[in-house]
Image (tube, one colour):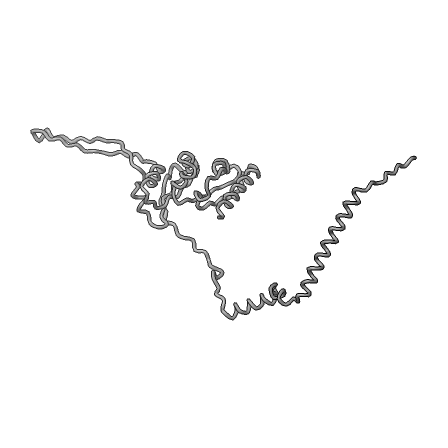
Length: 251
């Protein structure tokens, strides 16, 4: 129920950022969890493409890239995803998603040497030759993606010298300062209910204790007030219909 409200707040925040003017020195972070669940955000493309000069930074997360493509379409979703410079890729057992991740990280070229041996009729005619071929392979494979451990991920970096790295993350431990649930004893609950009853008297009990004659007189007083108001309004309307004197002052 709160997702449309969160999407509206995000739209307003993006508008405020752009209206604040260009400022590359400040940093305003937009941290968006479950990006695909917010639906199609019209300002997301503007936020990713233009927020840098306004001091905006975006960190977003989604369960699957297919969810993003489902909301924005394949081409628009790919464009949005490409605008994130740093990408954290966790375990995915879906073959199509794993292949997409390997394509994102790219390939590596390497030289492969091959040894060829030929044998002749005489031992002196035997020969050995070496050939070298250039080949390509993916930086990571689909099996590498599927076999990641919990909190383990591949990180795609914007630096061309260090294209990809592998990290083992440590979950953040937040200090618990307050108890999440404090049980209330029966004696305390009874005392609380009694205090509420004394502070807020019951309306039903007041009605039951009111004599019938008092209730009738109260109704009669209300009717008299209504009649007086109606008579006053009628008198005011009649006063408006009477001719008024127009006085001219001669000088």
